[in-house]
Image (cartoon, rainbow, N blue to C red; front, side):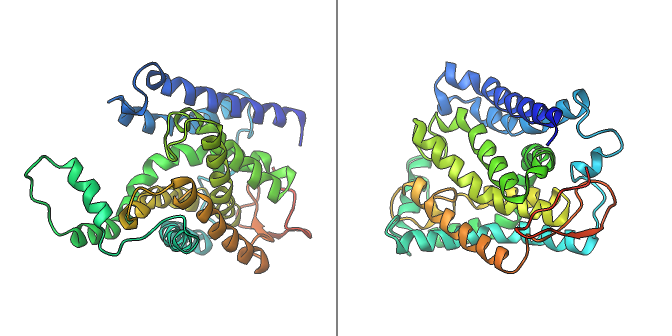
Length: 316
């Protein structure tokens, strides 16, 4: 990796994390996540990686003009068949993996499931004005699950702000290090970037370093899968859909839990999900899915076989 690219990666990371803290500063100066403005600031925070990627691209000229659209994975969508299929995988697979993580969490004793949905019904009742009739809870649960594919598409709009930074710019920038360092480092930075809201109790309800560490672990686990979609397709769009789909399915455990679960164990970014992700990653490794990757820049659509260990140097 050249010195200027190292400088660009450091600058991108500092800028993305700094902007995240800046955007969430009103929450720290106010009532935290209870601030009414949090509903606007959290989506705004998701745009900071994209802003950082564009700033570094145009100020430090990495990538160089003429390679930017391809480097960022925006276009062209080649080979088209592979990109489309991986977009479908990114759209539909995360809710299934989250569901498997819930079942595993129950098997490990991390959460107790309630097929009558009494816990969800009780939480919903607290949110409704007193005396308001509630429709059958089973109907609500079914409708929530049925809306996940549509919710994935809606969530993908905001997820694009993150993915343009993490999988769009950072993954190809780190790529000369090799596949596994790229995926692990980019995932760790992604997790660290969440610190301003994690330390306020977001995701895990933990306001200390353990919450940040759990977030880093979850982002590495999911980051390897999203990074694989990026590397295998040479496009950010499968990862954008997967990120949106993950966000849409994040509340599934609340529907089925008998009481409020420990999300660090049973949540979509918790330990049970790490195990499920690790199994999927192992299957991808054993079936050779990390060995062949289209170029991230240069000749579009040309498939190169990676050297032993699943690594190759990109033409960038």
